[in-house]
Image (cartoon, rainbow, N blue to C red; front, side, top):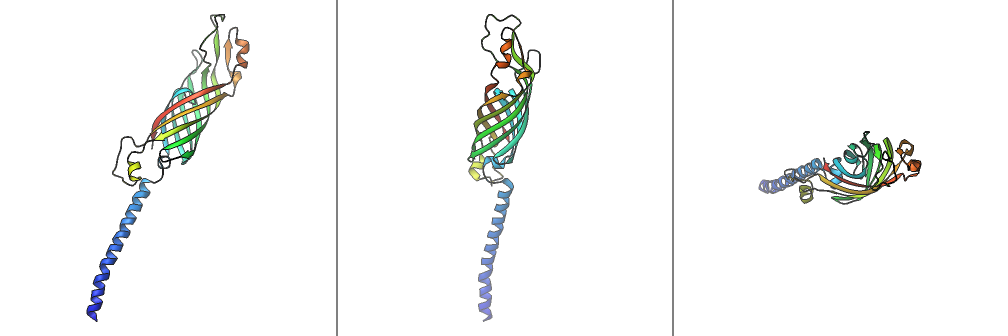
Amino acid sequence: MPRLVGLGVVLVLPTLSIHCNASENDDVNSSLAGETGTGDAFARRRLALEGHVGFGTPVGALGFVAEYSILPFLGVGAGVGIGSGPDGGNHFHGALVTRVRPLRGRTNALVIGAAYSFGGYKRFELFIPNDQPSNYFSAQGDWAQWAQADIGWEHRWEGCARLTGGTDMNCRSPVDGLLLRLSLGAAYLLNPNALACYGAAAEACSRAPNAIFTFDIAIGYAL
């Protein structure tokens, strides 16, 4: 009888050891997954640092925006840049932005943006009538204020995260975190009375369209 008990103990102990080792491995894997994060690229990397170039962007022709996603689908941010402005006047541009990503996959998202922007502005005129006086200038102002909205597509490169699911901490790729966004939209001038113009068309300055189309290219890095 003692021999049978001893044999049973010998058979049971390896089984318990194997079970314990498996549980420990599961805990380690869970810990790694928790440290590196799971889900899509927008959930894992919440802070985006972006350079912007385009026409009528919230930060002008060339600028910088920092955005933080308080939720994977909702981000808020601020930015500064340079762009159009009065001759010899202010060319600084600033903006407060918010972005919603209602449809997104692992690395791509539909992006809807809104912004309040301010700064110098000079209305672009491709052709100036020949009958304008030599000192004519188009509508412009040092501190124009805008309400803006746009819609676009965003891609974020994942590299290793796409292949390993974000659990391999030893995997590194030079493209991890890079982002590209293309957007089209419109901006509406909130304070048209802040603009001035001179010449034969001066009386039409206040009646000129207060909305412009915008095009924005953003290239950056998400942390």
